[in-house]
Length: 321
Ligand code: 8YV
Image 1 (cartoon, helix red, strand yellow):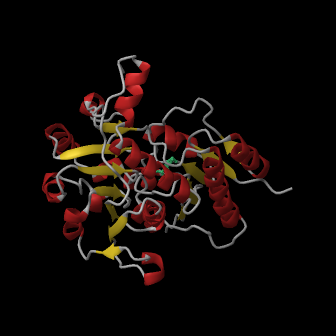
Image 2: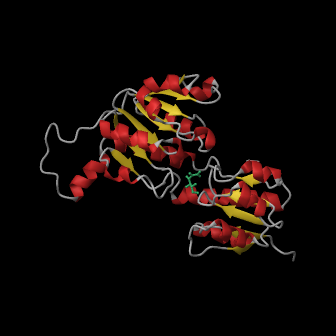
Image 3: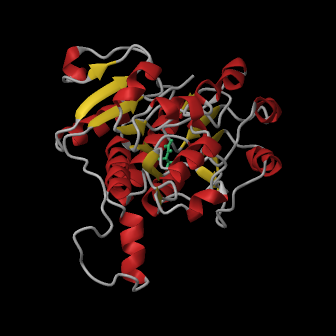
């Protein structure tokens, strides 16, 4: 029997995924699940045929240049791939795959949870119940803001942005969007396209960030763009923390320019800007966008489908480069 390819897996995977992985491949695992340093990644990669990585591994051009010759492919357990210098991978002839589609619904669900949680003051309400500071019902106690019928602007109308729009339509929201390319009518479904994001911002009672991270979108939501939003707007981010200038967002949440924010991702996570923690109008989650059993299994199986295709000499189903 020919030798099985060796896969270096940088983080723990769901059980069902590990079972399929170990049935098909020789594996090098990280049972402690610690985030690995670049040196540890390079060490683990020695003699491996492929890497199965996650966004906690920063595969810079420097690291990719130092990877051992044995490594012939990189599969990431994520749809986002800004943690991999794909140009460096391409230059080395290393194919990279990701896991699109299977996390679209879970991530869009979390965006709606953030919108409702931020608009209806879910964090403050939960805290009042748990801390027994809720004294009595009153007509003016902890008033939130309505989501139904409001305008939702979506920055980045890809798969996840469109799934957010679909859900928001059930709340009778009017959808506005900015995307690098305008969508065809059957995907637009009545959403209002804006040729520039800045033109869209004044129409956003709610703004959902659904664009990829990386240098092109770094700190996209800055003070100038927040100023273009209607007063008392709500911002939610399920994409990448780097799209938000935290100092500007925190200032707008403190001043009351924004009513609230719902954030599932943070620049430098898990070491987020500590000022978020003391803001009652910030509804915060620890990057749970794709965190359902079904979705994480599907993401793992997709990563394995790509590895299988590579080692069987087939075209990768989800090739990034
Ligand atoms: C994942 C994500 O949970 O896939 C992505 O790009 O942001 C998440 O939903 C995360 O990347 C862990 O793999």
